[in-house]
Image (cartoon, rainbow, N blue to C red; front, side, top):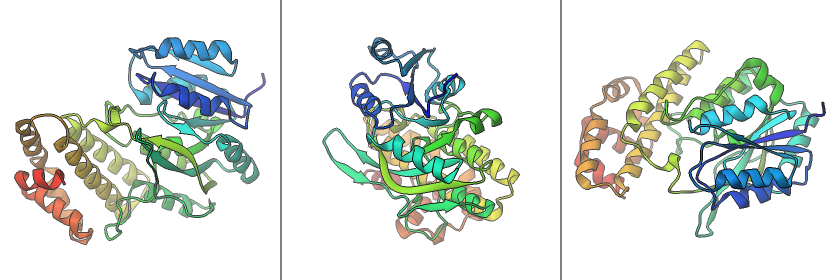
Length: 341
């Protein structure tokens, strides 16, 4: 059996407006020896038929139709059938540069790396684009110490740093070895179980088993800022599910002996996620009454009190220190107006 160089896994759900641009960027890759796996997650629009049409017209495209379980499990379904030497993930409303996988495959083979990470830029429907923080030069992580440092940087920055995080943890920003994923049984968690961080957990599980990783400064992926996507819609139970993720991540860090630094990074990540969730919910279309009730429930979580005692939040940049102080103290009205800014 001849295996393609790269298997590209794309969960598909309610994106008939965006899927053609995504597929054009994949079907026209300069690396032609690829396999494209479209995982129809019981999409309610015309995507199932569109996926089948792509498979009919190009033998490199395969389609999996499955019941709706979310993006994480859709990716797992793709992993179960992927035959490529390397694995890549693409979200169906995004697109990649036409030479992306030729560059990544060449770097992976030349360096014999377990993974190749790269940069991306964001864009929106208004035609605006902007670069994300990322790798400013080629970096080779060849020791356990180096790779563990990369894991920490993907989680979050130390308290005193200006940004919550400078290195992206999206699974779409890397090329992975397929045999390593399958032998170790690495899977995605469901975003319906944890409100955030399923990509980070996948990267953690993969990197902790890696011996050589390369990062390049090339921006090869284009991430759509889609206000209607699940990741942009804050659910009322977001904070509760985020707490579950936080506890899981802390357990994972303790199990792998990341010590105090692991705690500091994980906690800053959760503080940042909480701040983002508050802003998104307060700026949503629900009533002010619902927003205020939700904020009251958020600040009642006991883990804010624990974090206030154990995490040096006063070392954060001032605006983040202020925000944390307000939700630790339960000042919901001030939080409401701050989150509207």
